Every structure is written in C-alpha cells, then in structure tokens.
Image (cartoon, rainbow, N blue to C red; front, side, top):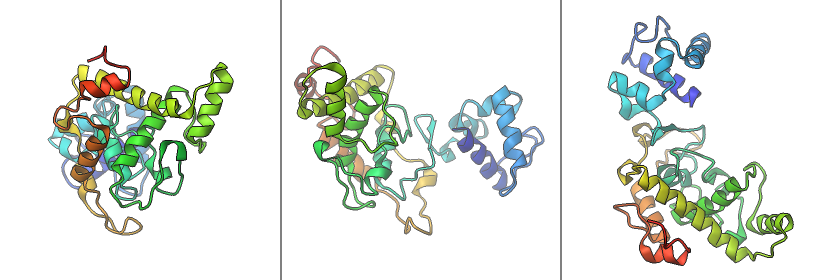
Amino acid sequence: SGGNVIAFAYYLFKEGKITTDDLDGIAPEWGEVDSAIALAEKIAKREGIGDLMAEGAREFGEKFGYAHLAVQVNGLEFPQHDPRGFSGLAVSYATSPRGACHMSADMYNVQMGQPNEAFDIESEDRFANEADIVAKHQNFRALTNSAVICNFYPLNGEELTNFMNYVTGWNIPVEDIVVTGERIFTMMRLLNLKLGYDTINEKLPEMISKPLEGPTEGHVPNIEEQLTTWYEFRGWDRKSGRPPAEKLKALGLDGLK
C-alpha cells in the first residue's frame, strides 16, 4: 500500500495535477528514489502530507479530486500483481473480502499452471474469463488463510485435508473441506454486508482499463462479464451481493443473515 500511494503521488505530480506545495516541497520524478524515501518517512511519522498519504491512495486522491485514478478496490491498494497479465485477478480483487488483496485468491499462480484437483481448479488460459475458478480458489484460500498457511507453498486440497486430519485426529473427507472453504468465504461476505459492503464498488480502477504493451499483449479483462460468471457460479444475488436463504441452509448457515 505504501509503495502504491507513493507511486500515485509521483504520477499526479508528473501529470501536473499536484505541485511541490502539495507535497511539502518534495518534487518526485520517475527514476529518482530520494523523493520516495522522503515520502515514506513522512508516512511512517504521519508528518505533513504523510498524514494524508497514510490513509491510502483513495483518500489521498480524493483530497485533490482524483480518487478515480487511485489504483484500489474498497480502499485497499493493488499489489504488484496485475489483472491485465492474469485476468482471474480482476474478479478476485473486485469481490475480495478486503479489497484488492492478492492473498484472497492468488490467481497468478493458478493461471501460471498450478492446479488443485480436489477443488476442481485448473486454468486453461490466463486471459480467459475463469471467474468460476476464481470462486473455487477463493474458497480454498479461505481455508489456508484460516489455517495460517503461507501461500508460497503450492499446497493442494488433498494435502490440506491430510494436514488437518493429522493435527486434529479427525477423519474429515476432502469433500467436507471443500464445503468448509465455501462456508468460510460466505460468512465473510455476510459480515461485510453487515458492515456496509456495496456491490457498486465491485469494479476495477480506471487505470487498469488501459491496455499495456509487452507480455500482457494489450489484454484488459472484462470485469462485468467475470462478475456475471462469478455470481452465477456462487448462486448469489448480483444486485445485493447476498447469498440466498437456500444457499445459507445448504452450508449450515441458515441462522445467519
């Protein structure tokens, strides 16, 4: 997040949208790092402009009338992983329980060829609409995140099930683990809805709609198409973002709203 908001300051300064007066005399230019260090120190100490930048890119942009240019979803800035290179990240960021979080579903790993047979996860094309696979991977990551397991290890559903059984002495079948992942992710959505989650924010930033040259091959993911696929797969209401009563009952969550 810190790197993102500092880069945003560089961009706005380069475009002439903010001045040195806005940045406490700092004049950031691409290619030099002294300004980034100075801004990072201000953020850490919440001094001057750093106090605002510490609130994130959205709030920083909003101050100057450019919140729409901030590369974030629901207030959380994008990491380095770009949906234009791995399209599954688009709907993953848009529907993540905590904004543009690559830890909620690291689709770059999946779309680079990391399968997970137990969860029926296998990518065929990094530029394709694989929103149904994203939903399955979100469920899987809901489990590994709950179990505090690092995403860097290419764990699959069978291994996770074995680990859980070894540690607890239980004898849970992998099918139950799959359902548990969906249950956890669904509970996170229910909590977010109580806290004011709004599907109007399920979109990509303006910056990400611009094609790039190089390995992304000019690809820009169709987020609306992905959201349609994602909601149809989950069986949730697209407009409200809410799981229906029959889905909650099937997951053993019928006491929740």
